[in-house]
Length: 285
Image (cartoon, rainbow, N blue to C red; front, top):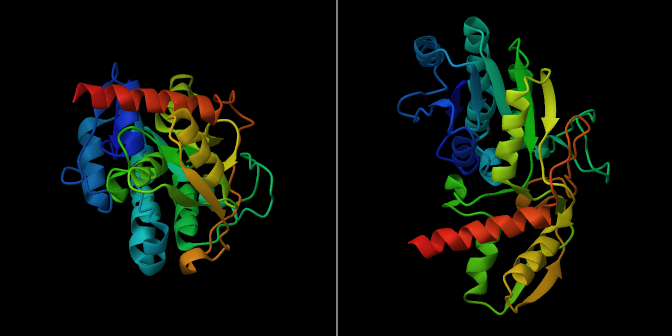
């Protein structure tokens, strides 16, 4: 297969490169492909003719999205319109990576692919609009993910993720306050990449797919499990946040599950593999 990955240097993007390493890959940099520009998108895709275009690019720092809505919609939605239009023209399938933040959390039970979105903030609204544009493509996969952690780290967050943040804080502190009333689906990017590969290789029907490790936990529970697995003795103090923390509305419950795919392994097992790979990489330095 010939696959183009937009955002290949990101946290999920790098694991997608790993799982598709036997395929013909196109991994354009932003300098090579500005997805905001329709003519550039058209020329690049016409020249290379990929079978699948996986769009992992996103503007996802939630408070910044509130301050820069124009940028949020440009990156998360209107660039998808460009990709979708050209994918239709060349007969490529579009894979758009979306988010659990399209939900408001009021259900208080895991959201599946049939639940109606109701985003609370600019980030969620812009990603939902991106989903609408992805549907313009005659062949599309909208893949919603949640609370990602991967060995590459998130470039927009300085190469970190929640796991790394907790481990770094623990180097200098004996007590950490961690949010206990926000519940999510921690997801290992390598597992997410493998599931996306399954969707593509099996040419499943166009539609929405939820891709997240099985189970749910609060950020407090997540931190507790990180330190348990790393044998770090530290005191965690639970704290509660409102839906409007830092002046931005967020869902307090954004757990997602799938009714279309075989469930992925439990997030604790995935965390164990992540920590093992993390140690191996550090030992090679």
